[in-house]
Image (cartoon, rainbow, N blue to C red; front, side, top):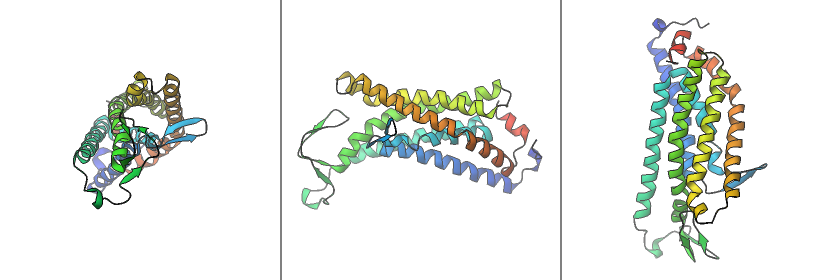
Length: 260
């Protein structure tokens, strides 16, 4: 049992709680942003799994969401997810604006701005380029569609994670940390993996450029990777709740109240 009561919360403890929230939210938003920026710019082979490089930091977002849900409550977790959604729109808007603004004259372009191509290349947005392509245009073509896909998956998965976390917490009356941590994350990451691959490669699949087998491999690889990360973060989640509850002087009554 915690020895702290809400009446003992001082200005120092309030500041400590806000700093910890800022750190957790910062890691959440950073991991989410990295997913959108590096996205599908590279695919890597991690053992038997074929993964977009942007997936690597993404499981961290669910650990941060679960810690904030447990320590700060549902409203704080939903607030953080909503801020992340706004950042998604900001990233997409900035990339679109940069793509719409004309480039400098060819003689003023730095040598790395244009990439010479040996053959025609089909881009993820459905267009084809030949001879040369601007580096930013190439990045925009490979990430803009992925950002839209991740936004749709983000809305469904992150709000699902927060909802399921508190659903399991109410159902178990605040017991069994492992159940609400894994139960919420495994379901929400399944939603995320299915949606992000479907939206990103749906047009190519309908056009016959991507096979159903390739999409299933990507979906399965994404989910297996996230599932392993979800199971692996059970211990960090337990340790984080145990030490942060004492560090933040959160009483058992306050923790239980967050389930409502």
